[in-house]
Image 1 (cartoon, rainbow, N blue to C red):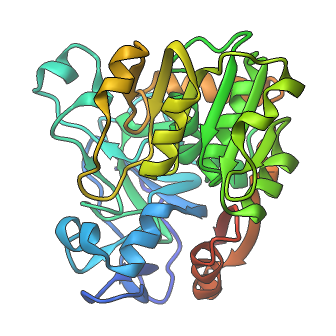
Image 2: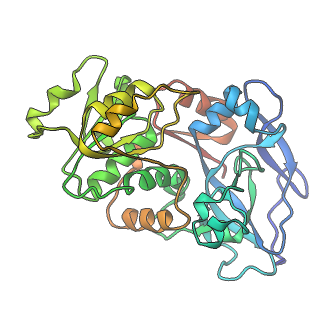
Length: 355
């Protein structure tokens, strides 16, 4: 390892962390040892982190979290920071270099990994979910997973590249140029997917939800048509958009069975749906409608490693603006306020400052 080590926090090798310390709702701020890195790792000093919907599941300690997350665990997986130490085998990365990183830790032996389809590796483990995460002053990460940040992308945007990557992966699943696009779910990832769709040339982008605050935010972030389906018939927007048959491409981001059913109803014959939202439990599906409309459905998981990262960084450097999706900013000592904002359902992205 290099000789340059991080400055002490409350002790020679201690750091501040947010930990799932007990099998009950909440997170707890604790002092933990700074991670020791191996020959192929880097140590990253965390500057900013984003709070993800997954972190809310972990906070709430729902059934998924209880099945998935070991206790205790340092949580968090959306981050930006700088490299302060690196292992002896690490090449191409430098001390002081600003970075974000891919939070999915992959295996190396599966057919998928050996063919370069890293995002499909069945041995994937997530930082902050299965392994110690980024809600900490320092993060150990394999050098393979590090994504350097250009000067044009500041730490605040760098901290939300992980969810932006989900949006980009979903949005670029199908050709969008000149197409009419329906997005169900105006959470932060749905809103960013809408911005991406417009950036790459979609003709119209309609985004639906039953949360008016989120629809209002979507209209601030991107040139979209927001529709509150609790009060408005989706078909009523067709004439103004010069649509007759329906939508060419759908992106299901809500995890709502009703939203997926509505999307299928409003797709053209031969329509294509990218599905990122996860319905709770087993959901009934009327497959006959999908078959008779010849609809293609693609499940989307994470980001393509690393093609999605290259594409989203290029788009950000070329005018894609998603900053307004960040609605709340807190110092990490005020993390409870940050989680309260996320849990309210009235926020966009929430960013915590660790500096």
